[in-house]
Amino acid sequence: MNEQRRQILEMLAEGKITADEAERLIEALQREQPKAPPGATTSRTKVRPKYLRVVMDAEDDTGGEGASRVNVRIPLQLLRAGVRLTALLPPVAITKVNAELDKAGVPIDLAELKPQHLEDLIEHLDDVIIDLDDPGSKMRVYCE
Image (cartoon, rainbow, N blue to C red):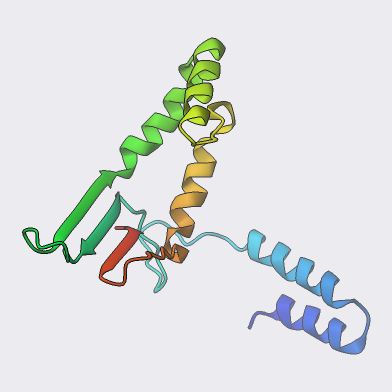
């Protein structure tokens, strides 16, 4: 534990600051910590994912050809480029696309879509859980 963090915790223990103030101070310390120098490796280096993967395995109980398998691998760079390209669409086109998406049951406003939103989605895909009503089917969505 570094010295500054220890001092914050001591002030909290002595009642000089509240728990909320201590939390804000610790978060500020974490933001100020210098990045690792280039070439240095850390044990928790997070690799930027390159693909969105959707895999579904389903048993065929209708007497068909057996089990079904869907395996989709989408380059995330394609999604990132698509989000950036929405900035080039004229407002009239965005309005028409939004209307058609809404008719199809996809209420997305392309004018509000920003590259940071996509990065946040990618970062949180580890938390995605998909429930299927079919006990013989299994679906996974993840980044690799």
